[in-house]
Image (cartoon, rainbow, N blue to C red; front, side, top):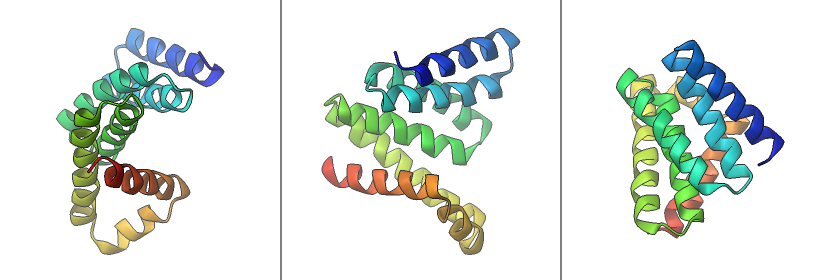
Length: 131
């Protein structure tokens, strides 16, 4: 396990013990990203889907699409084409709904963030690969 994954797991464990569901979901998303970056696709998928469930139920669209993206990317890397396709489609739909919800100007500013540009490229490339 990488140092980043270890730290994110510790944060997730601490958040669980505090009983704060938002903090837990945010730490699970960070854990999913760290696990994906270190090649642990199973942990990435599991953590991303746990976070996604909370974000969807809480109406947190921005975090929700990113959780779907990580689950999709990790599924693709794990050669799970069906789930990758489904998760990446959900990520694309979530991102699109943000544009509608926020309006063109706010969404343009959001898309100018370097992290979101990277996520968007990953989504575009991965979605094309699983079609």
